[in-house]
Length: 269
Image (cartoon, rainbow, N blue to C red):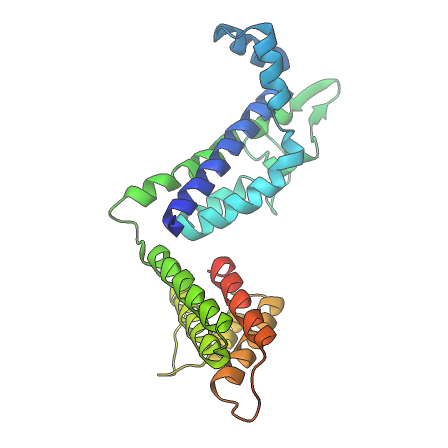
């Protein structure tokens, strides 16, 4: 069975490969003749060049989904470079004039060009080095997996959580509803505590509940209201399994708890 670390590496490779394709697409969109000449210099035939260009994605069609995934990777694994990554995409709020140095990818997506009279001062090619920098930031992440400075505690912990949730599913399948809910609840509590630690949030209670940790994350804007409500519901289901002896938990409720906790551990960091 593949580990989370192996899956992360594979997913990251796919993201980097797509980034390389997007860079080629951008270069071709800006410099079609020059790009084709470069391919010819690499001894590609006309048929190979046509095939290569046909496989390229459209930058505007794929960039936003690429950016969303890459943003999360950088946020999780290279947080010190996140602001640099975002600045290469977003228009500066204080920008008064547009030049090559402050032209960003957001400008490229709307095909923004700056002209003065009949002369073009800035064209879309100004975004190429900005995307190259974003891609290089992303390409720095694989080295973190191999570095002795990289803390793999969370990756190992994620594997353990998956294993514990598998155990909870097995308990549920065999009719042990309360035990299944209890195991899933422990995983949720451990994960929320880890998320609080990731963001250096002080946990003042010695034995904080799921509700305490959930509220702490919401009050510090780490999670949105929708996520807070989802976790709150998971906490209620955990309490039903652990504490409410007057009502027996239903199989569907505990199944909802296990799948909900699995989703939280994979999407909230």
